[in-house]
Image (cartoon, rainbow, N blue to C red):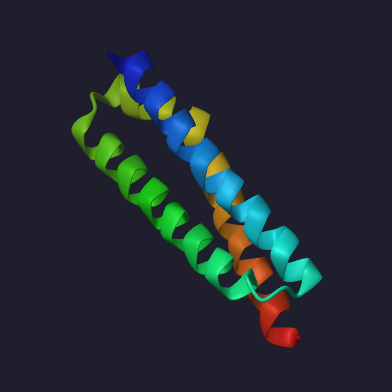
Length: 92
């Protein structure tokens, strides 16, 4: 079951990452879709963070350690990237 939970989080991460990449591209192009895409990216990031936190709380210590190692760093990196994208959008 631990692998299933980790794989599920990998899928959640992939969805959030895809939304971020779309939003970043639209923000760089300053398209009319950029604001909506940034909102979608933030929403998916929040879903990822919630799922990650819920999994950490409901898992055994061993599974939680695996999740933290496999997914935790990527969640923080994505969170920082979304924040940087928002800052870039504010500067324009």
